Length: 111
Image (cartoon, rainbow, N blue to C red; front, top):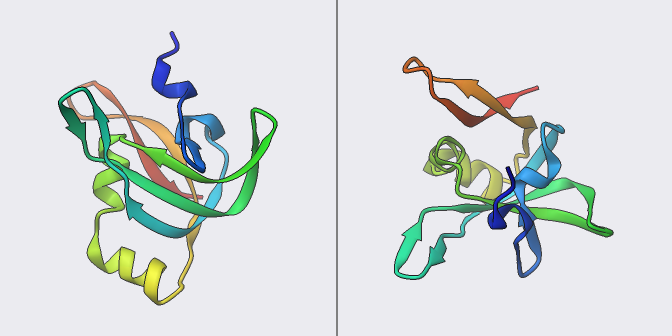
């Protein structure tokens, strides 16, 4: 089942769901919280070294509120290395994993 968020573009970015499990290299990370009504959900926007064809447009910026991805990319040392030291992260991909409690979640993994 699709959700409206799957089709939303925010400025110059598209939802990370649009690239599925394709590998990418992260060259920029910043906070990009998502607000709907009065509820704000923590999020991130990443810039990738690669461009992906999304709805007829070449896109290299993606946003997500996937909890495990946001937590992983919130690491201050990782952000410093990627954003300031210009050390790309990757290649990585976003995959579905199963937690110990049996629930599925999305996470970034090395390729």
